[in-house]
Image (cartoon, rainbow, N blue to C red; front, side, top):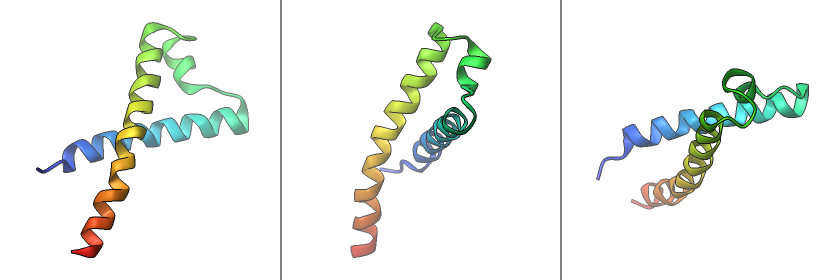
Length: 70
């Protein structure tokens, strides 16, 4: 099964989440809350998608490992 497109899409979401956490840590600025409102339904969906994307990308470790052994 080819999951390359899904991997890239979810990786982009995880990078957005990482940048947001960096802004929160260094500048106390939450970009998602700034753009979509403090815990609005849209910002909660974005936070949830970033979290699910991170959990899915844990499987990338197994796929990379299996490719190295092939």
